[in-house]
Amino acid sequence: MKESRVSRFFAFAAVLTVGTPMLGQTPSTPIAQESGTPGSAQESRIRMRVLFVNVPVTVMNATGELVSNLEAKDFLVTDNGIPQKITYLDLAPNLLSVVILVETSSRIEPLLPEMRKTGILFADTLMGPDDEAAVVGFNDSVDTLADFTTNHDVILNTIKNLKAGTERSKLFDAMATGVNILSSRLQQRSPGDSQGRRPVIVVMSEATDVGSDGRLDAVLRRAQLYNIAVYSVGIPTTLAQLEAPAKDVRHQITPEGIFPQPGMPGTVQIQPTEDIRYGHGNLMNFNLWALRNVKDQITGHALQTAAAQTGGRHIATFGPTTMQKAVDEIGAELHAQYSLTYEPKGTNKSGYHKIRVHVKRHDLKVRARPGYYIGPPES
View 1: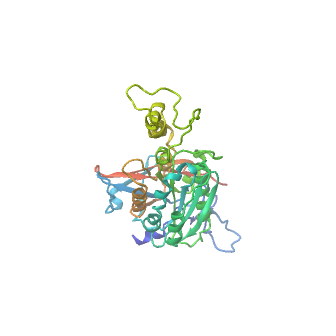
View 2: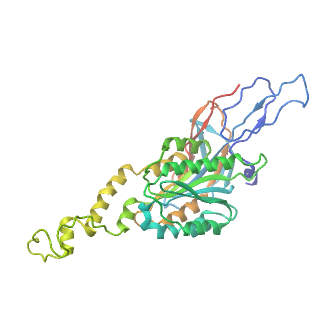
View 3: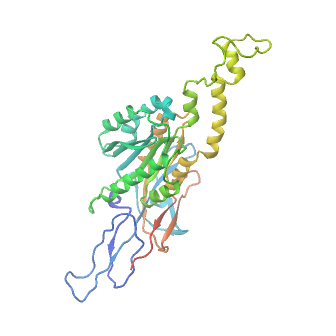
């Protein structure tokens, strides 16, 4: 639907009555048309923001395939429980502004060769012909590796040449940087820009934060304010540790080849059997993985939380799903989403608004951002 290309996350219209309060303030720069006759001394001029909410929606069938043949009549959207009329519906109408956040800590150095291979997919699958992207690397610091560009080769070569840094991984600070970059990008748009880009963060990282100053909940609140979706390719810390060479941390109290304890009954006393006996070598790596993997299952939900609260998606890459496959799936989804727009009716209160999107077919699954914020009325 061609008209929907001019639909924006926020649109503003004139008001012809005096004393009407303004709707809740939005995070983007307000644009208003003034009512009344220019120069009239008898008529007051009022500005009012009319809010249009844009909701990117992903629809999949039971086998996980993207569905792209639905119409507006197939959807039902509610705002704080109130059914809303869909103003526009289009399939992937907007260009993307993507910030790619890549962990570069020494913790994941063994996996860097695999991570570098995703460069071609970020450049050619996730980025469309006219999409723009920036790359930010993070370890103990958060560094811009490539500024916004539509040049796919720049993104490819930046990721292809990733290098490991220090040990800490400031995931939350990196996400905050991504939100700041995108929010500034949104505010730089000209008022007449009809090709509004959809802001997206794609994280390729462990789910664990080490050393950030910021908090995840604060970052996600700002991401929701600016309609920024967070997608993530989860790298298990334990996989990196398994790939790393084993370290012998034993204190050597006897000359090499001389063992401090008698051998186990029925075994030849050689270094490999002693390694197994004392829990070193490959066995130590395996035990370390088993212990840490349980911990990851309990505490490693930061990326899942970010995706769930912003309408994005988290893909873990431990097991059959590789990093390349995960990036490919995210790219396919971003370019096959519906853009659903409505003007909220019957729910004009400030604060957090819950969005629910349903498809009138029981065999389909829907994913959309869960809500948005409106500030208090202005006088």
